[in-house]
Amino acid sequence: MSPPRTHERWDACLAALQAHGRLPSVVAGVLVGGDLVWTGAVGGSLDDRYRIGSITKTITAVAVLQARDEGLLSLDDPIGSVIPETGCRDVTVRQLLAHTGGLQSEPVGSWWERSPGVDFSTLVAANDDSGALSGPGDFHYSNLGFALLGEAVARLHGAAWWDVVSQHVLAPLGLHHTSYDDAAPAAQGWSVDHFAGTLTPEPHQDTRAMAPAGQLWSTVADLSTFAVFLADGHPDVLSRESVAEMVEPTSATYGLGTWLLEVPELPGRRLVGHPGSMPGFQASLFVDRETRDGVVVLASSTTGLDTDTVPGLLLGDRELAPLDPWVPTEQVPAGVRDLLGLWFWGNSAVDVRWHNEQLHLRSLARHRLTDVFELGEAGIVGTWGYHRGERLRVHRRRDRTVSHLECATFVYTRTPYDPAVPVPGGHPS
Image (cartoon, rainbow, N blue to C red; front, side, top):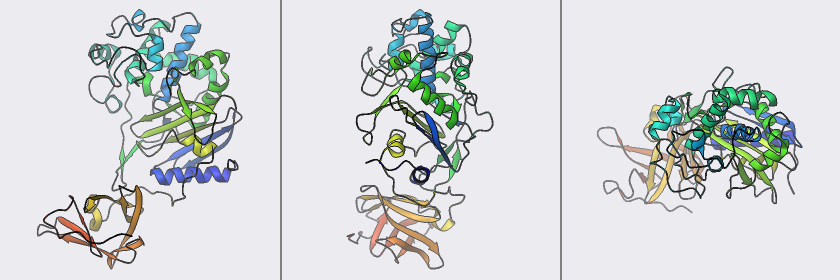
């Protein structure tokens, strides 16, 4: 039986997502029967725009289907009929929408998500199809393919891609808080240092020609409206029949610009929508077209949110163990700064990180926390786990660099079985 749908449970779920994922901020909403019945925020504001990454692709796909319904193109037209200068001119519009055109995943050049964008002529000149993986057929996710689709939409309407989607998709749906860039109020995107827990600001680049693949920013309220549209259609945007065409499987997990999700906690139900990520941000939007139940989650972190499991957590019976809220580190104490990182007990890898003003040891083999230490007047002393009450001793070389760590005969070295360090001891239960 599914757990009761209560605000208290959803609040607890969101708090668990923040703590487990080390998310600087996370906001969310739950739809039941097409109504937004709950929203929540941890460390952020529901009024802020978050970058939605590849959910942008679904909006681009809607504009493509609109153009098809208006008779401006056929889905089986080669993209070269609209963009003759592209090297993959024989790949069809349908194949680009389905990621089955054989294109490489990313454009040639520097990492486009973190680099200043280029205009379309520069993009198409650098990508002459020499990077194609194979002929059309199998699913292979391609950001480059959606740049081509966005340019096709622009040329068919004689306007910029953003002007087309804002006027023909966003405005009729009432998505007035969805923007091209980080217009205030907007969240800052962050990268969380794996070991220190400190924050590094991520760039909010204008991706220009690649914008149709992942540029847009939005809110929980706007994306909840868009989720209802994916369930019902809209007479001024796309009919329910055309939306249904978008969510028909073209491969195991994809339709035409839509992600298809089977959720173990919701047997027999298929959700549609899209996950999204850009530097500093992750997003998840999924809806059940039959029940009109759905979820929207937006986070301001490059990693830490499992976008495919969010629907099961908020709509099903999946649970996350409660944890204390995660707080970003402002400064790592000097006494532990050079202890962070990867260590080995024999051959067993151990992740040592600074977390909520404590030193955490995690077994990488067992994927779990094993010990917690606190820094005090008595040194670094265990407060939880096998080493509770024991002192973690730091052995340094003459130049003051750390040679190894030792706790109750357990010896941790930077390389497995370091010959310069005494043989590791200790036997965990």
